[in-house]
Amino acid sequence: MNTLEHKSIWRIRHTDKMRSIWRLALNSYHNFINYHHKGAVNYEKIVLTGGGTAGHVTPNIALMPELKKRGYDISYIGSYEGMEKGMIMETKTPYYGIATGKLRRYFDLKNFTDPFRIIKGYFEARSRLKKIHPDVVFSKGGFVAVPVVRAAHALKIPVIIHESDMTPGLANKLCIPVASKVCCNFPETLKYLPSDKAVLSGSPIRSELFEGDRSRGLHFCGLTSDKPVILIMGGSLGAVAVNEAVRAVLPELLKDFQVIHLCGKGKTDKSLSNMTGYVQYEFIKEELRDLLAAADLIISRAGANAICEILALRKPNILIPLPAAASRGDQILNAESFQKQGFSYLLPEEEITNEKFLDTIHQVYSDRENYQKQMAASQQNQAIPIIADLIDQLASV
Image (cartoon, rainbow, N blue to C red; front, top):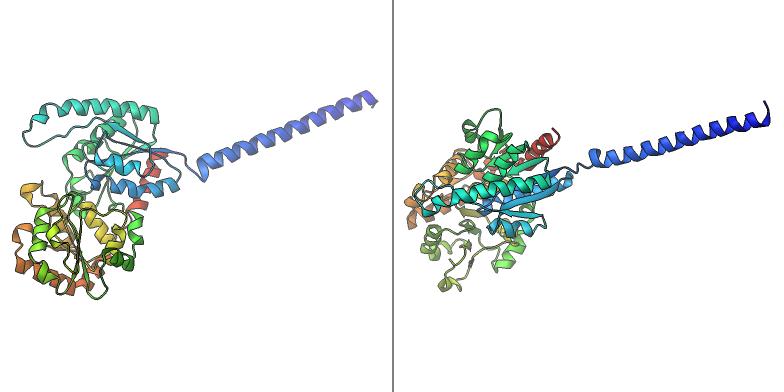
């Protein structure tokens, strides 16, 4: 072999070796990209929706840390100026408003205009979903969710909805036919849902509620550890009847208990401001976890999310549901289910007298350990991983 042939063979071998090196480098790069985009981290997109009351928003907020941990890019679609806007923007989540309207079962002049708002909201939601291009939509209900869910279905985006109450509300009834999965809080709800879609998940609970500190809560309220503490909650909008029932027995109640009273906006009573052992607030946000930790007994309305939080914290409780005359009766059914399962004592608002109210409080407090045992045995405290796994399944389809 002459020198020229030897050099040619060397060049071919050298070129082949360089090609192999480059091929190996490129494969390693693609493997690295695929690992980070499809393996350890998802990078899927999800749109959350729901609004109208805090109960339609807080479960979505409770889901966010787990979704972020799993690599989801989260966006939120709600109403232009509903209470959900402020709550979601505080989480630094991208928020997009749409027009909303309410479908009522009673006569109202807005019944003539709201259908047009709903139609407008549908096209706004459809346009926004096209821009975001999510892999899945999760809806917590409320009328703002209807156009979002319907638009997602039209765009062939899988949808999971969550029904908090015992029986589906009108908004969710309109969404169930196009949903891929329907999660619920109560075993009794399963019979109202399509069997191939229904999932008993419980309600997502904000992780920070488990981080409360009793001594910090007592210090915040200026209370002591000498007497047990009753926490009274009327929901995000307050409850006039519950407030009045508590104030009517307050002097007698304070002989054995201390009271933290969350009254609702504009519903505090200045004449009671200097009573020892009694504190009242319109609404508590950051410190709520500490007040819950300080509570030995809770008196509450029976909104689904509120009672699921009480269950998760295993707090003995008395539920005073919103009467059927003032609602569609969902709180009554919620409270009946919790009483049947041994989690709560149901006290109908129309049956409250001063004597019965005091007797019930003492009775439930005396029997508090039995209530706590029943709550500890519940399997309805795993909502976040159950729902997040469902989201993963649908996002990967």
